Image (tube, rainbow over all chains, first blue to last red; front, side, top):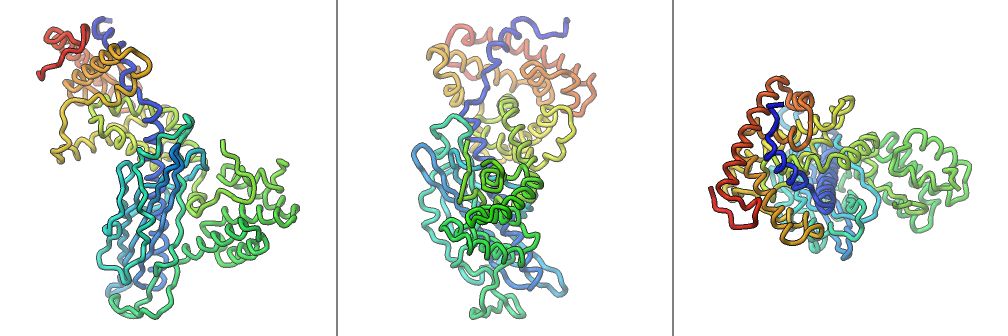
Length: 304
Length: 210
């Protein structure tokens, strides 16, 4: 076909056909970056949800902080941590209008070689997210920002931010398989006041008022306690906490996690029949859940 | 690869928040990434992205992919869909880059080319190959945006006219005439460059700026 590229150009293109192929490192590095940024947006989303709910309910000034800590286990055993800080200041105007500003700065989420996959959601809205994923990180005071100063300065332990290598430093892991997987954990930091009711004006703060955790923070704390109870060999307490979760957070965001934990707890208590019933239902409705493998491997999963 | 057996379940609160999203979506995302990362990477490079920014651009592409996964479902060709995202992200980055004079480094660097070719070829061959790839980028840079993308998709990625037309949402006849024009320009540029400087055939002489 006369329109075709001439032979000389074709020969040249053939010689450079593979010239822009990425390396395996490129593949892993970019993948880790994408995951870190997705995890970051979810962390910010968690903060947004937590604050929005509380704000809508009580019209208080809320400072919510989600801490994302991620371990990175590379060939060198480097660890990295990330902090997601969302500060939300809802303000009640003349009417019922609430303006919520969320500023979240999320720093590097590290990579865990061979770890479990943290799956994150694009469903979470992230009003304002700045993400640093591929550059060396420092946690500056500016990591928190809001329209007005927080009611109380949150005590973010600086140690969290200290040993933070760049993503580059964490990704060259020994394994050539899917190398870097981010695990992000959002936990409410107990030292940080989550909500301070303000009575009338947003500027008026009663420092003696007990903090009112947002529903999601409370749910997260409950699930964390249940998991911890299971981990230290107290499945009875885990079940009590999970029952508490069922009562207080029916249909909550962490229901799937709770079901998976409950199966583990029931197995630990020897309540195999109940575990099996629950596992069957769990696998029927969450077959692709990241918990599915552990549920299948449990006493209720029929794999043993 | 990791089996999660007993007492320590894999759950984290973030896992759980994600748990309300169909896990299938994540699996689809992973599959798309695995299958098309190289395509996206190559295209991003060949559309003239500063090598130092390729990571960022490709990350951005896949973040958009993740966000818009729902749009993809039911479409026949992942490549045409992905390319639609790639070209927008590349254009966005180019606009941003123009506002940052410090990043305006003309001509591609060869850092990752070295990494890519090392171990497979002799150092000399590796350098020559890097030189050829640099020449390719230089030639592509001479084409205007419309011609460049059609040329890259057709000549380097092997997409059909119909696929390119779908990717760009442009009439196939228009694509054909763009491709024809791009080929003639590319041939002329290659002839001219190799007349000026035949380093790409004979060695690694320092290339003078045109």
